Amino acid sequence: MNDRRHQIVAAAYDLLEADGLEGLTIRSVLARTGLARRAFYERFATKDDLVLAVFEQTLSDAAAAFTRMVAALDNPVDGLRLIVTQIVLGQVGQEREATEGAPAPTGRRAAALAREHLRLADARPAELNRAIAPLVQVIRDRLVAAMAAGVARRADPERMALLVYNLVSNTTHGRLIAEEQGASEVHERAMLAQEIWDFCRHAILT
Image 1 (cartoon, rainbow, N blue to C red):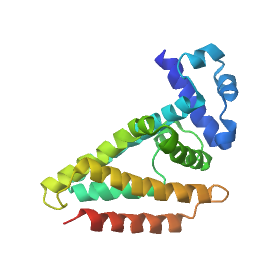
Image 2: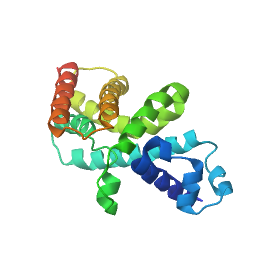
Image 3: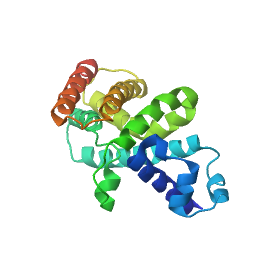
Image 4: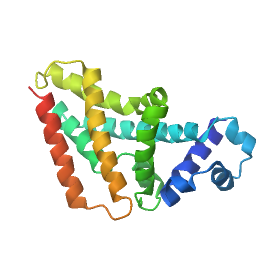
């Protein structure tokens, strides 16, 4: 059961990368996986449920990768900076390419998921919040550590983590959508990452 669910999510991931939202249909998923329609509907009630599953997998993978990276850093603020800047630079969700040897991403999937994130935040907020929870938790953990070390101001770490995530993700989504029709400017993205981190740093640190 879980193997087929994973197969369907992986197919959706690849279809989004190849053709964006237009390429992600239930028919195309079935064609790519060779599964029967019944197999799809036993696991997903709608296409939105499949997109949410893609979010869950992407952000869960990103949270696990960030957890490994920040574990090597003694300063929790350095961990926060790494997470914020890497999200802006487009490193979220790239673990699959690195581990499975897939071609370099084109940006179609990132732009498609950016649009879907904005839409699902209105249409399916509870489910989307569950999907982003692992990444928010990693940010929260770094904030708690920074507060314990006396380098971050005292506040509700859950609320602050959500504020950081929403600032970073919404700003990055706008850039991803703008870049969909053209190549990403690495220098401009790096400048944006630094600007967002500077804003977060001033808001968070004592």
